[in-house]
Image: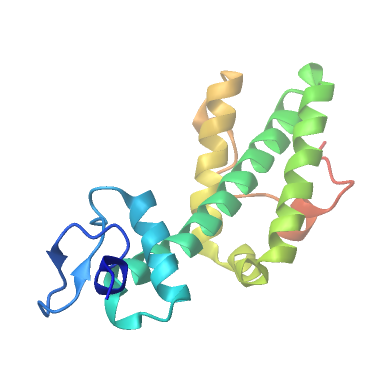
Length: 167
């Protein structure tokens, strides 16, 4: 029997909690090497050797990452709509481009990850994202945070509508 058939990829001599199966690179030491090793173990069907707890955490993190990206894009879009409304004399092609780019990216994200769409109706999520948008707009314009509406004055469907620009 060759050494490869006895050990896992990247074996460092670490043991699973049950003490039986050797583990490769520890998750805490090098997450990239760990991920490659775990993927190889899964593809090889060596399910007894995988790091179940960390794999589950990583899968959950993928969803959280998608949610963060979605919220960030929405906040950028809303901040630019606020700037558009509150500083009409400063409207630029750059603002228009950012609005169009964010709408396109949000539309793509919703098409690829339809489970994000219900967030557009969650009051707490909208309030958090709106707070981020107000803060960004205040930082970029010099207009006071409190001078912007406390809650979003537009419906999410209006915000995402291609031709919508507040006056």
